Image 1 (cartoon, rainbow, N blue to C red):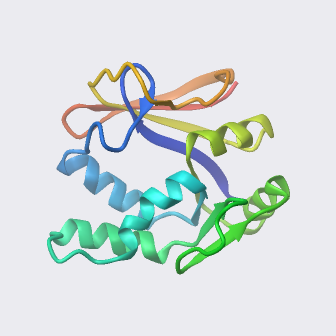
Image 2 (cartoon, rainbow, N blue to C red):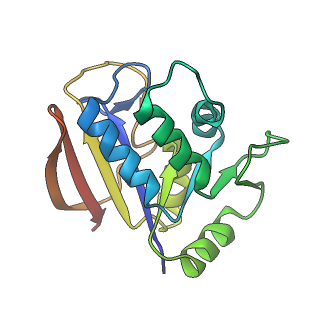
Length: 176
């Protein structure tokens, strides 16, 4: 049975914004290895559209960006959207019955499935399907943006804390 994990980079004040801060080399390496080892990912529409950046090669990319893109492209993806009509390669559109689809993925796959997108994560939290939360805290205060928790913070129990790269602390929680 697979474990459903919601984890993202966020500011000290709890916002996610991929344009406000970037991973250092060690954290980027961490994300490459993380993505490479996934059983798959479930994306909300907005986050999937951001990540589609990795579908096309950019001649200016260095070796690590090409490596991340290859890992991202090879992983199965499920995209939750009622508005998208087409999606990229290695992706399945989920338009209805999110709960049944995710329960089926958890039962059928082994390893980790990530959830990408705070609103989607909130829906899955409300359904009791997220097994672990990973908060990658960056030493940045944004004061605005999309919060990591799109609704009330669920009761959580801290399982681990560790440093990733020079400035990031990863906090790992499970539902309490």
